[in-house]
Amino acid sequence: MKTTFFLLPLAVALLACGGNDSDSKAEKANEKRIDQQATGISDDAKKEAKQTAEGMVELASMSMTSYELSQLAAKQATNPDVKAYARQAMQKYVANEKQTRELAQNLRLVLPTELSKEGRDRIEDLREEKPGTAFDLKYLEEIGKVTDKAADVADDLADDAPNDQVREFANRLKKENKESRDRARQIRNVLN
Image (cartoon, rainbow, N blue to C red; front, side, top):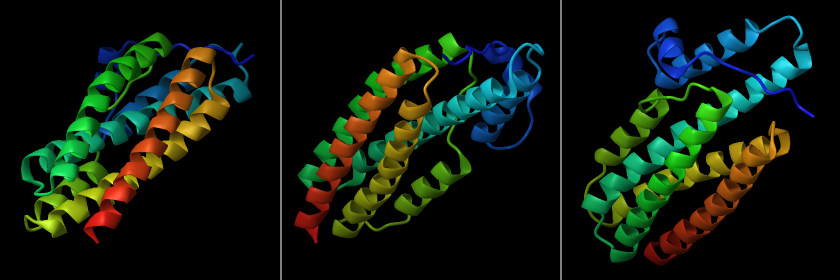
């Protein structure tokens, strides 16, 4: 059984960490607290705790990126299927965001509070695309990349989860990301 780890409350940890990227801040805060834990916690347990924390940070970050990409596509996409897909992605984000934050709070993890640099770059790339089929295809490409990465992280998190609650959450996200990725590919194939 994996050791449960305890981290500083969210507000204190965010104030204590530095850096410009929200993901980096969260990761540093989580790592610092895990390293400062009592000597009774093994190095393996600390490593597992860091892996879980990193996975949760990555999932939260990619989820925010997916939401922002989809919000932009819901407004600017020209194809009705792309607009519908974007709206559906936003609804899934809202449903999953609450559970992600609750899990993080139970594990006493710090999660990012804003888009990462990578996420901001993806949004900017999409904004630069001209409206029409090119925009729609770019959105599907970007959301596909984010979804693929999220599915990989969820798969790793499911394998290394510290408890059943995290494992079930990660397995559900993995399944949802696969379905979302497949739907985006179908739409992209129609547009090409």
